[in-house]
Length: 206
Length: 80
Image (cartoon, rainbow over all chains, first blue to last red; front, side):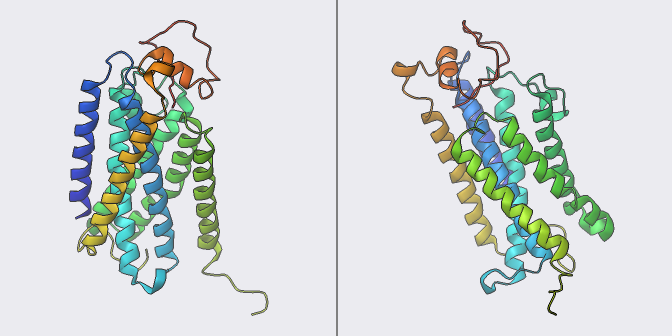
């Protein structure tokens, strides 16, 4: 289900992005640029949701009394959906007529001439995201420890995606964007603390 | 996820997943339209042209060298 929905959504977004590229001003149209910004923003939010639900699974959350399966399936769909938006983000920026990003820029970290470090952070995050999803898709044929170790890439992946959004994007200075990045990063930071110490936490009075 | 089902087999709650996918897709479209609308009216700002885009994104591109002439093929940043 998750992969089918993601494939369908990725195909639909690719279609509208390509159509937008064809009908926009070939010299200076902004439709693909806007599509890339929108897809990047949604991808970040899905990655954030995926990280939150993933840590929640580790902490054995039962949101509103729901079964752990609800959290697990939320974790799965937000992770896989995020990949489709990363795909749309990259496709739109590669097709953009002004920024002129090459496929190589989008796939190989730090090769971009435009803000190479900031863009490279996003490219690295993209590959980490793909590695985590691939290891999960192949989890049935790999050892649990291997899957877990690869899954730990989720944390630097989120951090790099946040860094990419904050520094490579043109919306970072917008108050709304700053608010979103600050609030989501704060939640992740708090959950990381809970994850590191929560299970073994023993109150001083105990 | 210790003790949880790993991988993507035996998926459940498909209705919830469809709703999440629909919401994400809708959010993408709304954000796209919002970003496009933020460029302003073509007559007022020249949106759609490089000069218009540069004018609209001047704060975001403040760390770049100012361009006095349109450079449509140059690698440059753009914003809203």
